[in-house]
Image (cartoon, rainbow, N blue to C red; front, side):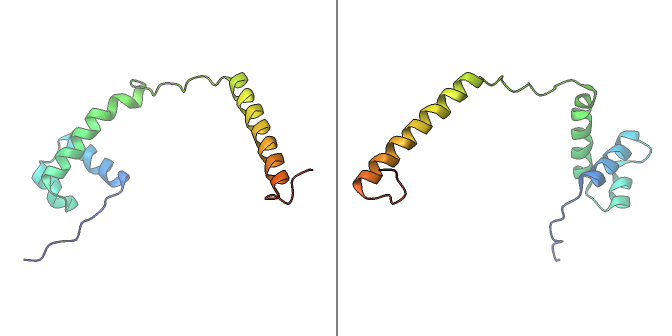
Length: 102
């Protein structure tokens, strides 16, 4: 008996199968035969759909990112600019950087 290669189903296909399972008009075995997917996979997709359905209506919204402290970022930019200037001068005086101001 040869094994079937692993298949990757699109999210749209998974949603279609899971919705059919939620409707309950057919058994899992009938859906498995119809969509050529194992019944355990259909049950998993159905459970994931039911578990995540509340998120569609606003529950479990992701937290807003923390506010950015602009003053702190400007201070860091200034510090880095000073360090770059200092190192550029030092390398120029040492003869290791041709484009440094002397």
